[in-house]
Image (cartoon, rainbow, N blue to C red; front, side, top):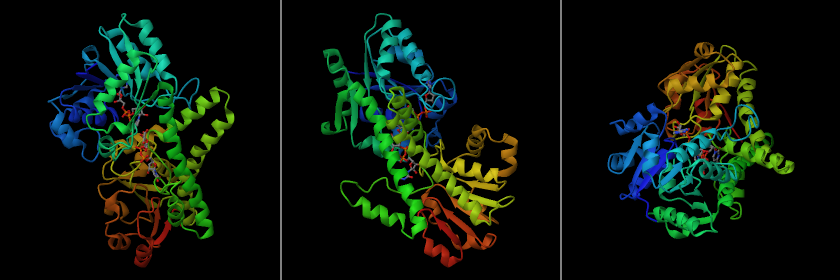
Length: 464
Ligand code: NAD
Ligand code: UGA
């Protein structure tokens, strides 16, 4: 089975970069990314590749190379479904905000809509690939919809979860630790479909790193990987609080622990809390699935990862208030960073949002600077919480164009995202322009505490 036409539904943080790489590596395959969001598609098609809607180091060059050659972005979903031999579903699967499973289960309405649309449009056999992160056994639901509402067309369903991290998407897609493909191993058609996808990845990934498995293992492996990763962050963050009480230093602890090859050194960076669109959503989903099978101990075990993360964000914000003599009312707090990590413009579930909200509840005046996040996005994030009206947010919050401007006449600086540029700021000048005592709260352990103290700052570093 040779694939010549791929359609990817969903031009987001996963669909855009993954398809750009497939198009770059497989010039003989035509790859079209479709989305119902016209603005997003227009941005992907912007003549100026620096204006594509997702900021990822290296991505614009790849889009420049492949776009118009064998990479296309379109809003004509039906037409592209019809043409494709292989369809990736890469739409969002957020936490449900209504009804059964509210606040926990994954909302699969966008997935189901895609399946119904494919069933309605398809006139030739197709391989449908789950790229979105989905609850285990979603493939069964897809199969039921496709087989019962289709035009007699044959579908093969594969699970091919994406493990890229934002900010390093291009690097992760070029050199993934592994690619996972789950499918129907019991039938020839199932195995052929899996091989067709293996063949695509084989264009640039060594075969040893391409794993095939049964479809349920593949779906569940994705949730498991995110749960394990998030668990490491919560584990080190739990220790960070103990370090602050005991005089231990969390970096030293992480180093000592991480040098044990059974534990490993990665993902032990203590922080103000993990953010991003997926860790929380996927663990909540895992908790919901466990509960739905009556596995309450399993559910409780994983839920604790989220509770710890919420605690970390809250206690960082509370530390600011306590240190500023128990009140920040009317005080100016500069927040450096809004994205959930460096090198991305994505702000979903960013710890910064929750820290800002806490400070605003305490009537602080918050001034925000992030090198890649727009003012519009920051106000949208605050409004989404629903705790204050947009006009109230705009009264209390100012978004500025430089770190220097944010810190001017501030009572305190809180560092929320580990952008490299914050390391090289003129901290002497910032100190001179701040109110005294000048407080600095480093939620990312990015800065050199001793140097800052020498300048005169009163410094709090998470985990020290
Ligand atoms: P996203 O919100 O950035 O993009 C999803 C896109 O799908 C949106 O542009 C939306 O308009 C579009 N869409 C929704 N329904 C549609 C429909 N019926 N037809 C056409 N377009 C439709 O989401 P994302 O961050 O790319 O995540 C997508 C999935 O990948 C999620 O399941 C997520 O858990 C998973 N994932 C994300 C990451 C990540 O780093 N963001 C990494 C691995 C896996
Ligand atoms: C994460 C996973 O790393 C990806 O493998 C997965 O594909 C993706 O989720 C997904 O399913 O969406 P991502 O959220 O983009 O990727 O970024 P991470 O690098 O994992 O960081 C997540 C959060 O944890 C960030 O807020 C980061 O600052 C924080 N973090 C990470 C720490 O606080 N400490 C660490 O040691 C590592």
